[in-house]
Amino acid sequence: MATLERCPWCGEDVSNQISWQLLFGIRNKLHCCETCRNQLLPIVGPVCLKCGRSLQQIDERFVQGKQCSDCVRWGDRGWGKVLTHNKSFYEYNEFLKKILALYKFRGDVEVGRVFSSLIHRELKKSYSFIDQVIPMPASKERMYERGFNQCEVWIEGTNFVQDSPLMRTKNEEKQSKRSREKRINREEEMFEIVEGANVLGKKLLLLDDIYTTGTTIHYAAFTLKNAGASKVYSLTLSRG
Image (cartoon, rainbow, N blue to C red; front, top):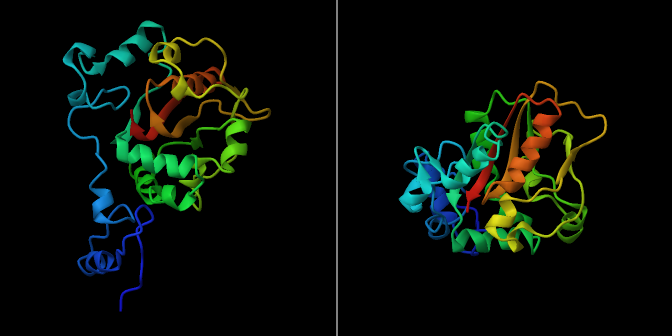
């Protein structure tokens, strides 16, 4: 007899779906119903070699070689070697925006925990060489609002959990409220190294929920590289 299980996103009974998946040994990567899963848009096809953005989703005028215009602009500013590359799983569509809002701003941790197994598998498969996974640190203000760091939840119960060497310098205006131009061209410090932390010579991976212009990730990577990290990569759930 199947155990009653419900989709954390819509509440649909998924007991029968799970029973058939187990029977044929094809357990889905995401523990949610098929209807919800089909509303996610995995990134496929040619992608920007630097940020992982789908090149099929943007106007060809904003593609130079195998990079998008944002990454070309980072390179023109001398930041081309700060971040080795980013990988994202999904396009940031309206459905995923709604799911992340429930997770981050309404504090429904189980909604976000659906992605944990996906991230665990990717870390083991593609990033076994990494010395440390660093969930993107939230400001004190954001931590007070949410009560948790959404990226830390994704690596709970794994050997990826370590004390972060990175911290926010201050509470700040949300990136979503800034224009694209202001995000890329900001000058103030966003992060600093935790006192006593040592990243010298390490290969590090930043974990975040969304990559839009790459500002937050580039500034975090710059701080880590400036402290002696050999390489900094990033893995994000979505690409905006």
